[in-house]
Image 1 (cartoon, rainbow, N blue to C red):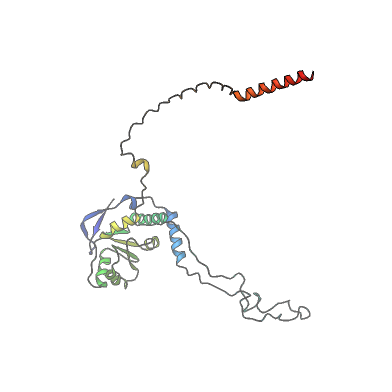
Image 2: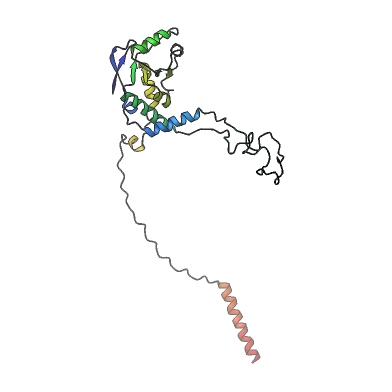
Length: 270
């Protein structure tokens, strides 16, 4: 996608610039824009609202009059929320209005906002405006030459203090670094002027990150052929021979001698 570059007077500079389709060529996501804008507006709220409840009102705790016999409706103390100067029922208390939006959703919202501006011919690439001293007249001439009317956002390459001070006196004009402009800033501006030197900065800030997968990283490396796996059968176990009995010769001789003595003793008794 190419856009024509314009000079200060609003005429074509004779060249064009290439825009990254990953940033400027996507389908806008309305839900991401809604989430980011809602979070930005919520962060601007201080959350310091507070009203005094019944226990915080500086009044007497005495019962106003007796329960019966007066003809009036029964009443407690003067702190009652039903009476003037009493406490507030369920009044607001201080709390934060923070909404968490992850970084990828914020980038998607900003890319979607830029796409809407591009489709509506509200995004214009202009030459870099370099000023030595603050000159509101030069900035007003550039805006008038490029047909800018109403709210406009000028995106620069980094912080340009001279250009900021030159444009701060013009109603509806904001000057911001390209990588710091939020989704609300982009959507709130009727026209977005993108300086030529800030295109690369904006593209680098909003380009979606691509993770290199392990398969793609190893695809370029040569793959060695796998070695064949050969199943070698284990040798069969040899049969174990039965163990021979161990005969103690001395114990055998002692046993034979004992048997002989027993036999002789029997003969004598007979």
